[in-house]
Each structure stands twice: as C-alpha cells, then as structure tokens.
Amino acid sequence: MSPRKKLGLLVIPWILVVAFSAASPGQLEKIYWGSEVPAGWSGDWPVEFQTVPEKTNFQKTTPHHEILEFINGLLWKSENLHVFNMYTSELRNVCPLVIMANPRVTSPEDAKASGKPVVYLQANIHPSEPSGKEALLILMRDILLGDKKHLLNNQVILVVPSLNVDGNDAWSLTASTTLPGLLGTRTNALGYDLNRDAIKLETPAVRELYRNVFNRWDPVLVYCSHHMGGQKYAYPIVYCTSNVPTAHPGPRGYVHETLFPAVRSAVREKWGVETFFHAGTNHSEAWPPTIWTFDLSAWTVEGKFIVSGYGLRNRMSILVESAWHNTFEKHIYSQYAYASELLEYTNTHGKEMMKVCFDADQDTVNKVMAKAESGQLKNWVEGKYESRGKVDLFMYPEVEYEYIPGTSIRRIKPAALEKGPVVIRGIEDITKPVGIKEATFPRGYLIPAKFKDIVEKLRIHNINVHVLEKSVKVSGEEFVVDNLKKVQKRGYEMTELEGGFLKSTKEFPAGTYQVDLAQPLANMAFYCLEPEVGDGFVGWGLFDDYLISIGVRERSVVYPVFKYLKIVE
Image (cartoon, rainbow, N blue to C red; front, side, top):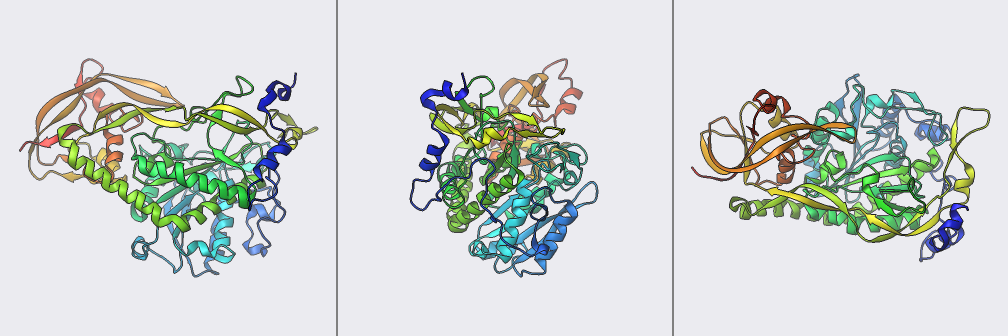
C-alpha cells in the first residue's frame, strides 16, 4: 500500500493545500512548493552588481575575494554604507562588517545617538550552507541601490555575509544537485565549529564577533542563516529563537508570540513561501510521523549556539534554515524572502522591540536587588522541551535520493517534489522550552585571582567584573564536588560534576574577582559560572585542570567559584 493510501484522512492533496494557503485577502494566488520560484525574482541588474549565483544560473557560490569585490562595488555607489574589518582570520583573511544606515552611521556612538534600533544579520557561519550568504548579498544591494531603501528609515542594519571566511574557500565536492558542486567547509581553518562556541569562546572569530558587534553595537536582534538536512517537511524556510530556560522570557516570548506569526504571514502573502518552526519529525521510525520536536533537529535548550547564547543577554535572536531538498536558487529565494520581511518588521516595530529588551534588563537587575540576598531568587540550570499541543505540517511523504543516470551525482527523485506536499494532521508539537532543575541565583560570585582566563571570557561576554580592593567576608554557598565525569553530548565530550551546595561564610582577600549580579547580563553570568549548567564553563571543561590538580579523582573538593548572597563585612 502506498504512503498516501496509508495516511487516509490525514492527507489533503497538494492542489487543495495551495488553494487553502492562498485563500486570505491580499495573498499570492499560489504557494511556491518544491524548487519553483517566480521568474526574474532577483531583478535585472548590470553584471557588476550581480552576485556569483546570478551570473552562473545559480550553479556556483561566491568565493571570499568576490564577496569583498561586491561590497567594494556598493561602497562606490552608495552614501549609506560603512565597512570595517571585524576580524582577521587564522589564514589572514579579513571579515568585513557592513553597516547600512540613512544617514550614514560609522560608529556605535552614532547609532545610539540616532535612537534607532540596531539589527544584525549574519550568514556562512557554516560555509557548506551558503544560501544565506548569497541572499544577504542580494538584499544589501537592493537596500542600498534598489527598491528597499526605505528599510533604512528607522533602523541601523549590520551585516556579515560570511562569518567563517576561511571555511568559505576550503572547497570540497558535494556531488548533489541541491547545492553547488563546490562548497566551503562547515568548520574554520583549525577545524572548529563556530556555531558551538557561544559560551566557551575559544575561536578568534566568535570572540571578535562579541567584542566588535554584540558588545559595541548591542543589536536588539541577531539573525543567523543556515541550511537544514534530512527532513521531509515541505517548508523552504524554518526558523527558531533562543530556547534557553535560563534566559529572561520577555524577549523570547516576543519573538515567538508576536514577531514570528507576523513575519510568517508576510512571507506567505508577499513571496508565496510557506514557513514554520525549525524542528524535526520521527518520520524515519513511522509514517505518518507523530512528533515534531527540537530534539530531532539538534536545536537543544543549551546556550552553545550563537542565537541561543545571545538570548541570555536579554536580546532577541533568530535562526533560519533553508530546506535540503530544494535547488540552490530556491534556497536563496526563500532566505531572501524571510530576511526581507524580517527587516520590514523591525523597520516598523524596532522601538517596540527595544522596549521589550530594555524592560528585561531592568527586570533582571530589580529581581537581583530585591531577592538575591535572601536566597529566594532561583534560575534554571537544566531544561527540556514539552508539548505545546497539536500541529498540522506540510510534508513530502516520498522524498528519496537517486543517481542521475550515467553520473555519480545524486538528486531528489523529481516525482517526489512534483506531486507536492501533503498535510499531516495532529502531530505532537514538542517545542516548548521549560526548566526542570533550578539553583539559587546569588547576589554575585567571587573568583580567586588565579583564574584570569575565566575572567577574560566573562569580560568578552560583556559581563562586568571588578577586582576587590580590600578583603571581604561573605555568606553564601559553595559547591562540593564529589566526582568529575566526562560524558558525550551530541559529538562533544563534556564535563559533569556530581556533588551539592553547602551554606558557608568565607573571607576573600583583596585581588579577588567579584561579579555583582545586579547588572543586565546577570543571566549570562549565572549560565557561565554555575557548576550544574550542562554547557557552561564547567560543562566545556574550563575548570577540569584545576579540579584534577587539587585531587578531585581521589576525594571531594570545592569548586573555586563562590556564590555569595550578602557581604557580611
């Protein structure tokens, strides 16, 4: 029996899906499923302002030197552009940060004085996923020279089209029809995945991203583009936000409940692209699938991803993924459609977004001031996903690969996409982030003077750290470590500490580092320093050498970061 017959009442034929999707007033008459795009969607531009995909019928992606040439061409034609080098890579490639504003803005101070929100878009953190890079290059051109100049009326737009500059030109063969034949590598020149470095900060690229963009410009929204593989959903673009339970819920709630529905509707109506949340199904185990969960898409409740970590700063963040089964042109088209409508939204609602974020800053500080000394204030050190209820999903039930006859190139069997998607009804939507284990949120932390490397990472995160000028006596909690063990989590060896907290009163000498949590980035500091957070500093092994040196393999020892509730004297 075919998959369609098995689905029974769960299936709505594709032609009816299109009619249903296009029913509301103002919508396009069709939805562009599969690899279909509108003819001439990217416009008619002189060759000097065409991107590499546009010049090659979407058969190639842009090498690093041509990214620089493209940006240089825009510099000569627009007065609303400023560019500076965000960082220089291990292979001595420069990573340009593009600032677009009207009037021109050349510094964070200028942006702040304008009163406009700053929005930051980045792509190519994984160069093997290049569609966002190409979409942002086209979008920059259209904003500066085309019909989207109005997007600079009420916002300052920062763009890094290719964050992983070395990986972009580390060419490898793909042997697939859904992407160009030559692609960059996922990792940087030293083999690091930049999108797993949001907490531990071990790569120069991510450290300079924090120093030169996040800390200096303080974007109200960070947007990061990717490419998703291995799923059968029919959405050309899927999206998500930071789901770390430790983060303030205000910015995350605004993105999920307000921004996402508005942008989704606009992308559907103006571009004919249906979008949904970035998650995965259990289609490999059962058809029709029964669950839709972030746990099947690698999008955990941890902070290690750039977009996830940014949510710990009381700001908004979005990750988008283009679908694996469409052509490269469709990838770029759908990325362009989503980024365009997102900027339309921020151009209109940017001040509203700023207020949500600044309210979260103030609320964070107020709670620390009011409750921390009593020990009543708590926050989450571990989370999971729970159900939001049931959802209906557009999916391709018969997606399969085949080799093009006479070649070694793989493609999706054309019939699968030509039939269009079906609707699977009543799938359990397991995408709601919730905390499941909490710890005392202290007034602050005290860190011995020997841990300068830990303090440097905190400061790159923009966390305020002071040095005690005289000794202090404090009451609070210290964590007694009974065991240090290494565990495998999604391809990484992580550290877990077994033990518990004991109430204690201690005296710390002058020269000790103090992190007073009465600051907007208190949640980030808590996430980094708490010993029970799975991918905080402990999880990434930053305290392993010290704990082993003081004998954790043989006996119980004390975690060196002290949680103080109040200063006694």
